[in-house]
Length: 91
Image 1 (tube, helix red, strand yellow):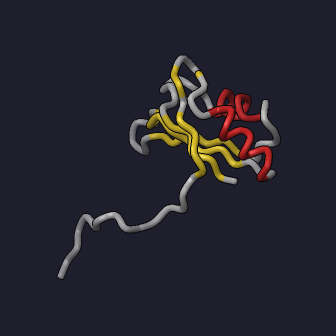
Image 2: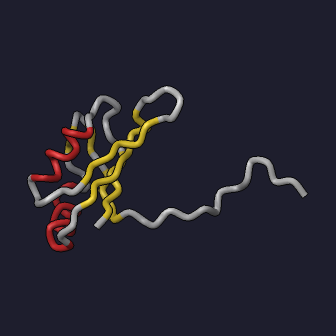
């Protein structure tokens, strides 16, 4: 299951994010989204957990939990859609 994690501390590392979720089961990846120009954290990320039951338990336990001094928001990630407006739509 791919899990969205929001309201992350801007100083939190991917290793710390992974470690927090590993307390609830196997984590195959943990990624904090960063600004492509500055490299700074955007305050959210994604954790991939291969076992569905462990992922569901992590969702329940981690949503609202304190991590890095902030209460994080945790939800099942929705698939990305490309319905964003085009910057240069030429007709």
